[in-house]
Length: 500
Image (cartoon, rainbow, N blue to C red; front, side):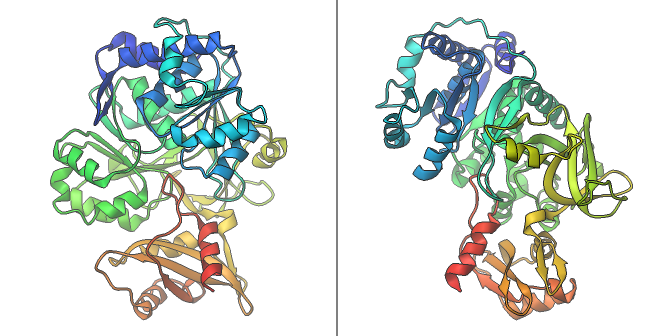
C-alpha cells in the first residue's frame, strides 16, 4: 500500500477537477499527479530508496504537495517541518532526523548550506541550492509506477509542537495514516463538490492529515493559502467560494467581531475547529451569530483522530470532544494505569490502528509514551460520562497546585471566555512562597474593550471555588502561540518571569 494512491485515484477519476484553488490560479488533479510523478522518478534517479527520509520545510503550496506526493510515490518517508522554525530549531531537527534530501524555500538556504558542510543533507532542493524544484522535475518523467510499501512502514514523520518539552519526531505508518483519513472523510462527509479552506500548515496533523490528505482522498478542492490572511478569507466568503471552514479556536474569536457574519457563512456547510480545545463560550457565541455548530474533536500527532463531537450535530455537546471514533478504544486511567469509573478524572489513554509506530530515534520517549499493555498515554486529563462522551480537563503537566489544592487552568479559562471583553486568555501557575504556586491569568482584551481586574475577580468568585480564582490579572497585547494557534503555556510562564 502507499498513501500516494489517494492522489493517483482522484487524478484517474477526476483529472480536470481542481485539487488546488488559490490566488494564482487552479491546479487540477491530473497536473498535480503528473508533477508528483516527475518528482518521484527524479528522486529514484538521484538514488533515493524506499524508506529513505526526505524533509520538507516550506509554506503551503502546490509545489510542496508535488514534492510530498512525489516522495511518497518513490517509497520515501516525508519528514515535514514547520517553515517558521528558527535557525537553531531547524538545525537541531535536521541533525536529529538526518534526511538524505531537503526541499525548502529560499529563506532556508543559509541554514542548509551551513549544515551541508558537515555532510547533511546530501541534496538541497531549493532556489540557489543544488537544484530548484523545476530542475528536479525536468529530470523526471510524467509517468511513474508508485513503489508499494508494507502497511506498517513509516510514511511520514511529524514533529510535535513541543508544548511540554523538546519536540519529538512522530513516526506515522501507511496503515495509520490511511485509517485516519478514511475516518475523517467518513465523519466529515467530504464530497467532491466541497471547497475546503486550508491555511493551516502542512507540517501539522491538522493541515496534512485532516485537511489535505482527506480532501484528496475524497476528490474535493483545497482553497490553499500559505498562511492566515483575514482579508483574503473574508473575500473568499463574500465570493461564496468556500463550503468547508477549518480554523483553530483563536481564529473563531477573531471572526466573532466581523459584521454580518451569518450572511458571509451562508454557503459554508461545515465549520470545524481543531489544534487546541475550544471554549464552550466561544462555541455558543458562534452558534448564536451564525446558526452553525462548530464541529470539533480530539486528537494528537501520535494518534489522529481519537474522538468526534459531530457525527450527528444535533447531539453535539459543547464542552465535550465527543465520542471515540469507530475502531478507536479509549479509557481513563489513574496514575497506576488502572481504569477509573465513569465521571472520574484520569489520564486519557487510547489505542487503535491509527496509533504511531513510535518516536524517531528516541526509544526512551517511545517507552514513556505507552502503558505496559500497549495503550498510548496522551498526557491529557479527562473524564468520560455514562454515554461515552469524553471531556478533556487539561494537560497533566499544566496542573497547578496552590495551597495543596489542584487547579486545572482550562476550567478557569472556560469561565473567562464567557466574558465579552476577553479575546484570548491563558491561566498559569507561578512560584509563590506562601501558596507554592499562585494562579495568574494573562488576558488579551477585545479591541475597544476595557479590562477591570476587580470585576473579573468578582465574576470568577461567583462561579469557581476561591482557590481557583486568579490572584493576578495581567493584560497583554498577544499570547505566545505555536504555528497552529495553540497557546504555549511554558512561554506564558517565561513571560511572567520577564515581567516579575
